[in-house]
Length: 342
Image (cartoon, rainbow, N blue to C red; front, side):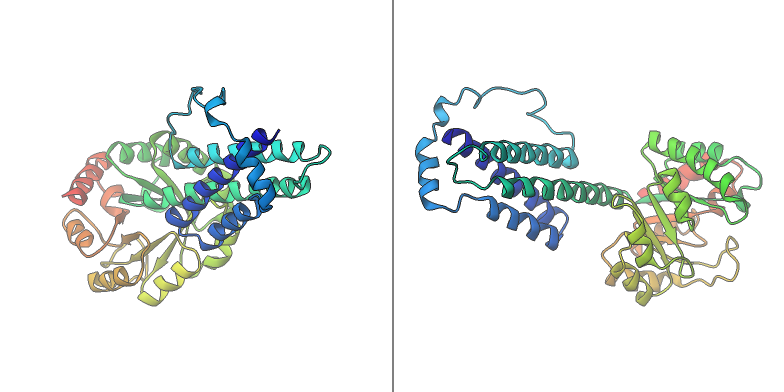
């Protein structure tokens, strides 16, 4: 019995430490890290007499399962799968200790391990969603093509999206301020499926409901849209939020309110959006100095100035006319992608 308890307490401590380190070093999430640390300490055998008994009963050399090879144990697909595997391992061990602690003359509190198990279910969810969100945020790079309904001039979004994806675009944003929500959602759902198959980010502009209903990777908001902090609360934990800014102050506020990337612009004067003025490369440089998030530069960007915008600090370039206004969208996309990479 003591060997069984000792083995499961060790699994619990080891698994929780891995989860704690992911929260601390990969996500920089102080609250989640502290929660896992407290849980790990609370579940340790704090009775010195019990600790000595457990240690005396330990016999790793005689453990028939110590070196048994389990399929899938030697390799994890990614960090979220690593987190899932270790969370499940801890949850299973918590249940084992919880059940055996119900037997007579046991020094462990069964209710404490049951509570910890349910706490960990919530922690696992938050940790996994945060990692998925982090992965999406890190993919905000390269060419970001905005499929503007008006600029498409009657062409099908999905068809054009297929061409720009073939040309090397890394993100697609659907922007539609004219059609009814039912039509927009149908298009968004198709685009989400296409982007998912192609491992391209799919972002919805303005419409939180469309982003949620289509299971988009994220939502993009302007300064006059739903407040960033409110949108962050409403979005699931694995979805990213992009915010349009024109100044360092706006960029810092967006970052503080939970944005995952900052759109800066219009960098140059553009005809794609009425009433916009170019903020210039100097403002892009200033914002790059004060925010740590990926920056998407937008506005008047084309093959001729793309390299200069990247040099000024942009991680990604958002374009409309440079691609949608070209005779061959795939070719235009490829040429811009090559400029970004040069």
